Image 1 (cartoon, helix red, strand yellow):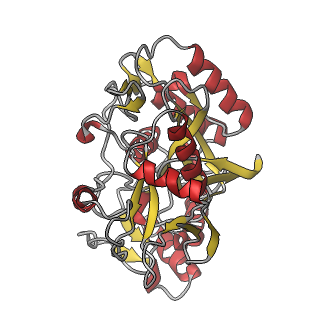
Image 2: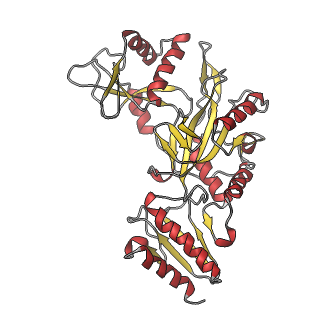
Length: 394
């Protein structure tokens, strides 16, 4: 067995003792300290964004990835899709359950989360028959998506709406998000705002950890909180911002809006909890992110190509306001079919729907006044058209 990069470059071969440890992990025959040792080794490989390649065959290399079960918080060894079969008798042979799990694994689209309903963001720990600790998987239908929560907060706080007279500085934008969080309980009668930090750095992580460790409201439930901040980049399993050159590790999944990774800045919401029962070591588990226009303006961006024309639209809306025409720009972020659509409305009841993408990602809006930025010769001609549309009946 060897550790490889995702481009198949060899990192190193495992020692016989390490191979034996992994074989025990795969067969679930480990106990005591060996379980922790195997998990630590696998977590190190996973955090480095690397894979395992099995030496059971001379003609091919079956490849395995280290997955994290989002419900239980436990690591799983999985054979990569379409990877060669292992040799007969290999302890890492494909399990029929893997194929069934993959077939049943569907990522539901982000959904609106109603206020005043417990979020169920992470499963509880329970005792296994052997006396060890595991996490309660619960009903997958009840497990609420972290991304759905972030998008719902963006919608309710009005970050997806821009108008000159509604402009807020960064402090006020985060204040709106914290206010919305007070309506969303992590558990029954435990507002998310009580265990939410809106700054990602070691100081605020330690402050949140201290509050969680001293809390009595979680009773027998798994203690967890949230960290919300604007970050520069999310790469592999690290969040990067100006406060840490090394970044902050997270152990679970990165849930991103629109099915496509986009460069920063990003508004990121991270789940913060112990990975194992009884542990006093708190970690970032899952992370959800939505690209935003800038660190000072948290308006959601669907694709990188939108940034330049979107900044031009914001500037144009401010200019029209100075001329006495109020224009409001809104972007649907949840529950809509056309996520690349921006709807501009004026106080003179004129409505213009625009897309800033070169190619549509959904059905074209069924409206008379729809324009695609890519159909214009330049940004300046696009600006002139939008300005003329709203100013002509002034």
